[in-house]
Length: 170
Figure 1 (spheres, rainbow, N blue to C red):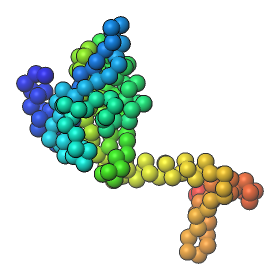
Figure 2 (figure 1 turned 45 degrees about the vertical axis):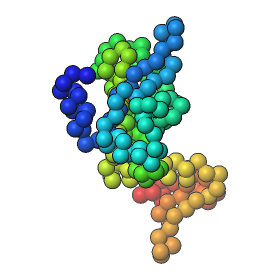
Figure 3 (figure 1 turned 45 degrees about the horizontal axis):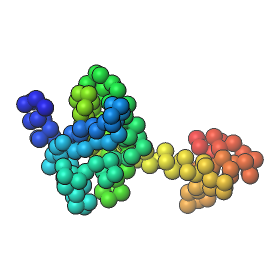
Figure 4 (figure 1 turned 180 degrees about the horizontal axis):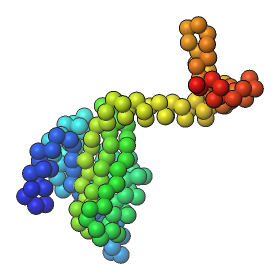
């Protein structure tokens, strides 16, 4: 890393990690390893009691494995170092949503930052998840206020009552 990017990495208020990509004899990305982590990263994952530079690799890491693995395999074949990808994940231990930003540094290294989402962004994600679960349910689900006025009904409930959900969701 250059001097300015090293200083940015060390003094960033959000968790960050720099990774190297391991390849097989055919040059295909097969794993990654931790090159550097900043203090906020260590604090975020302190409950795992892991020495990330010594032990951290794909079999033991805090990233969502399917999305992350696809990212670094794709990144390994990209030559432009400014390509970026992002992913939102829930960290149960912290009871918070984070937005992960992956950045290609060069052909063999990439970085990841963990930025906590705002309350509004978190609320929107939770609302969309709840709506998805309710609409996916085979059961009738409705929400009413204290006067008994229906505020929400899922599609299955609307089907059973012979109404259109949009009539309720004004």
